[in-house]
Image (cartoon, rainbow, N blue to C red; front, side, top):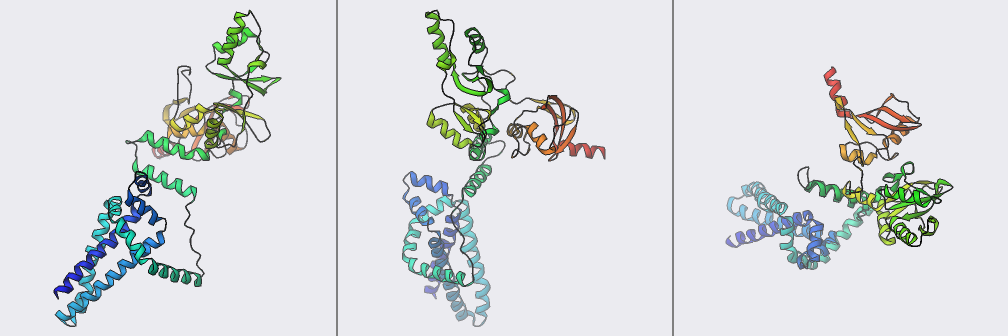
Length: 430
């Protein structure tokens, strides 16, 4: 009897080990284990190696746990029958179930969930040994399982994680570990980096209607006056018509040329001789690819064209960085640069028609769709399928838009009433 009690204690300890190990290995963060492996942790290295063959690892844990639990039930039942006769079966059924549930399931799994990485690292060496020893049995069980699935016409699930699933997991981890009070800026930047591959450059470019450019035939005096009032370091050069960009002028190059011309008493500068060749990119290029291209080419400035080669705008390295870290203002920026937001009465917000939808969503915590349009004006015209008139009001995705000002066919000022404000006004009216 004493030997049976010792055996039961050992088996309960083994059940504790297998149950806790299963939970810890499953719950342990892959990223933390990977980082610890990089730092030279041998247990983390073993765990990562086993997790790459998760079917063998889980099979070993389940095999060990089931064998141990069955042994506990058999020994305990035999012992209790000796002590209590036929009533021992009833006592074993409820008594063993309670003991196994509390000390071999709930307790180890609760501890493992509290400290998954630490628990997993502690048991890594033992698990590594058991996986090797029990490998033949586990493979046999997996083979039987695979054949059974084949007979039932069940296709095995592809375990390869897609890029979207990986990004979703990272986003979930960021949201889980941060909130409005802690690491809010870091959270914003991390999620922005994940979005770079999904955003085309046309969503953040400066539209061609807002480009600051120079005619290739501009006289020297006008060039000097122009650059003295311009905050930009690179200026597109056009010939014939403004959309025909033939080069890019770097202000530093121009200043060197002006200095040389002053010393030689030369009054005219030929921009075609000092400008550099323009770099054209497609508007569908993702921000991630463009950021890499800027790095490879060691350039900060690119002109954006559509599939027909027509100029659409320009994008700079600063534009891409602002998409990650938010607005960057320097000493050359004007005071009214950036998104203009004017809060009016009754919750109405006045915005520029050319305001970028992504910037509006980011600053005002809105959820306007940006798939089919980059600006508020573009969104309005896409949804209503016509050019609106001043004073007209439209409801788009729960937001109420009122056209305040237009220049020709371009919407320049628009008032927006967000959904929450509309709902509050309806409640007050009722």
